[in-house]
Length: 207
Image 1 (cartoon, rainbow, N blue to C red):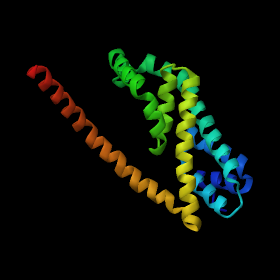
Image 2: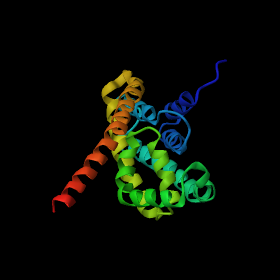
Image 3: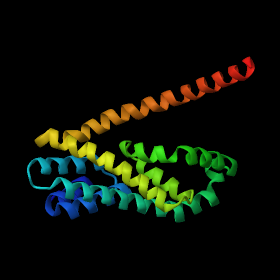
C-alpha cells in the first residue's frame, strides 16, 4: 500500500467528514503542515457545486479553521518563538536594534500584511508568528485574521466552484502565479524604496 501524502490525507478529511474535516484540515494546514491550503478550498468549492456541501457552513468551517490555525501560530510566536528571538537573535544576525526596526515597520503595516498574507503561501504562518512574538493584543490579531481568512477562502472556494471537476488545477496555478508574484515583489520593493528615499532627499535639498 502506498502511504498517503499530507495533501491526500487532509483532502480525505474534507471529502469524508465535510465541514468538520474542512475545519480540522484548514487548522492543521495553516498551523504549519506543508500542503497547499488552497487545494482544500477549491475541493470544497467543487463539493458546493456538486450540492454535497452548503455554502454557508462551508465558509464558516473554512474561516474558523483558518483562524484556529493562525491562532496556534500566534501563541507559538508569543511564547517559544519570541523567546528564541530574544535569546538567540544576535547569533542569527538579528541584533536588538535591527529587531526594533522590524518591530516598528510591522507595527505600521502589520494589519495590511495579515490581510494580504493569506494569498502568499507561507506568509500567513510567518505573519502570525511575528504578531505573537511582538506580543500584540490577540483580539486585534483575531479580527484581522478572520477578515483576511474570509476574503481568501471566498476567492478560492469560488475558483473551485468555477473549475468544477478540474479543481486540482488550482494547485498548479498557485505554485506558478504566486511564485511569480512573490518574485516580482522581491525585485520591485527595493527599487521602490530607493526611489522614495531619493525623492525624499531631493525634496529636502530643494526646500
